[in-house]
Image 1 (cartoon, one colour):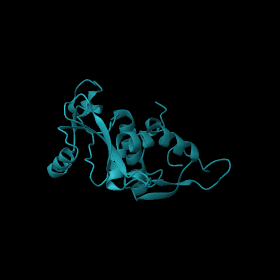
Image 2 (cartoon, one colour):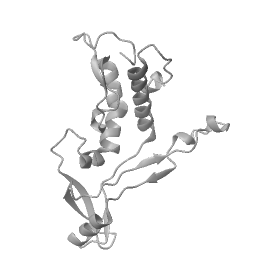
Image 3 (cartoon, rainbow, N blue to C red):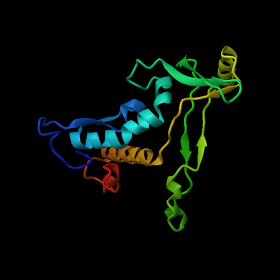
Image 4 (cartoon, rainbow, N blue to C red):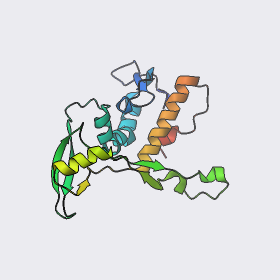
Length: 193
C-alpha cells in the first residue's frame, strides 16, 4: 500500500486496490494498479475524500457531469422577492447557476520567514462563480424573483488540505515510484496527526 506499506488489500483479498491519483469523482483518470489497502481506502474516503466530493464540491460535480450518481438531475435553489420569504425550486442541472467556493491562501509563514500562525493554511477569501449573467436573468424572470439563494456548500480547509496532500503523494508515487522519495505527509493523509 502506498500509504501504510500493507502488502494485501484485506484479510479476505490479497490483491491491493487500484488508486486514483486524483479522485475519479473529480475527473481523475490517472491510476496506480495494486496501490491501496482497504483500511487506507476507508480512512481516506471517510475522513476527507467523500467530504470534499459531496459536501464541498457536490453541486459543481453534478453540473459538470463528474459524478457517477446520474440520478441527480436538479439542484435546489431558493427564490424570493423580498429577501425574507423564500420558495425552494428544483432547477434542472443545465439551467441551475453553479456556486462554488475556493480558498485563496496567503503565502506560507515558513516560506516568508514569519512565526507560524497557521493562518496561511486557512481560506482567507472566497471566489464564487455564479454562471452567466443571461442564465441568472432568465432564472430571475422565470420565477419572478429579485433574490436567488443557492444550495448550501460548506468549505472546510482541513479535508481539502488532506485531499491535496493525498493527491500529491499519489502523484509522487506514480511519477517517481514507491520508495524513491521521502514521504512527509503520510500521518496527515491517514489522519494520525
